[in-house]
Amino acid sequence: MRVGITGYRNLSDLTEMLVRGELWRLVTTYGPYELVGVTALRPGPETWFAEAVREHGGKVEVLLPAGGAELPRTEIAREATAVHRLAPKSAGGLGDDLGRALVGMIDELIAVWDGTAEGDQREPAEIAALTRRAGLWVHEIWPAGSERPRTA
Image (cartoon, rainbow, N blue to C red; front, side):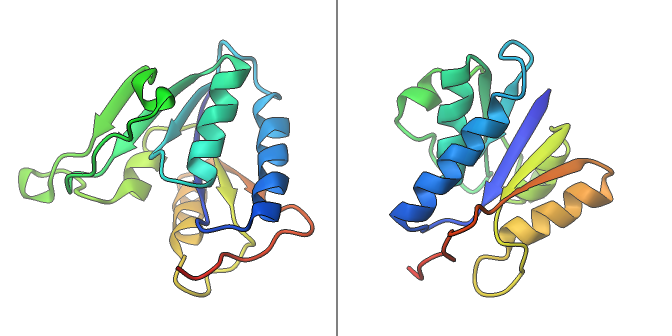
């Protein structure tokens, strides 16, 4: 099962704790040998998800935009089973459109968000909508007591 992740960034410590617990609960519903977590490995839920997948025994694949983002220098990144860098738009690729690329690579999506598309962090809403239009399942995670992202 290939599972992708999107979510708010800049979450509080309390929300991190709540979300990590829900991610672990969800990740452990999959068999470790069938689970492939697909993530851009950005700070926050994407990294927490990758850690949970790895701790559960699954595999992690990293998705990078064409715009020159570097692979994080972390143990998770070093142990990824694959790194997918998007081709630039000038070469017919998706460029920096991680959402469309992600949806094309997964069977299900985990979206860490409160279900709204307000404010400056609309990406989770956009990727969840793309995923649903593709006919794929979206697991929404926003535990009771979670706080909206802090502004940077």
